[in-house]
Length: 225
Image (cartoon, rainbow, N blue to C red; front, side, top):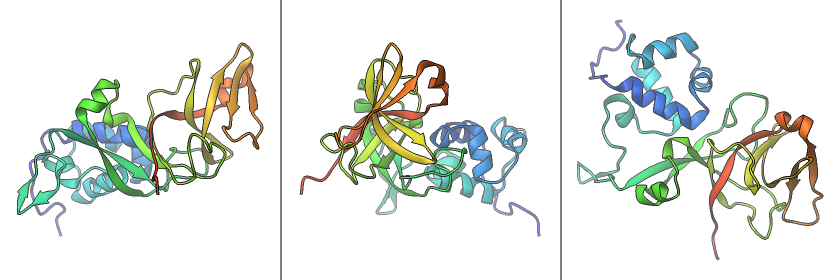
């Protein structure tokens, strides 16, 4: 049987795939996650090669974007009464089941997208944020109790990986993800837990490059009941 028996207008798909790849750490990570070569992915993005439908489905699944948007550019919206609802005011950010991530691959390797969180484009723009570089995960444990509780959802900006001054960041240590307060000091960086039962960890200047910062926490949410 011939491949891609169902035709579709793939114009602009390369741009959409490149945008989607930012949600999983870039094109290299995306190629690894969907098990195709980087060269093949680059050809698809350049639109020198048409992707198989199963490739488009795989990209949509791992990045959390809708198949309709990825394949033909239909706005990522819910269907209401057979019509596409107007979602021009909202961007959607994937919430990953990524409380821990083993190995040295993409931070969300083997993680599943649980759902998508909706944010108004105005609110993101006001904070200088781009939905294509954001993702959400849930906090695991009580080390940040007082600021973040076990199970809280946090929004992570993967562009903000350079520690300047002080802020809460998601970092990976020993194959696990942690939300911690990072503080730049004269001697290096302090990794601080809000819960004083956990001791701070000092990273000297000469070893800062070994600290894997996934991104800065820019938003958090929790249940009040």
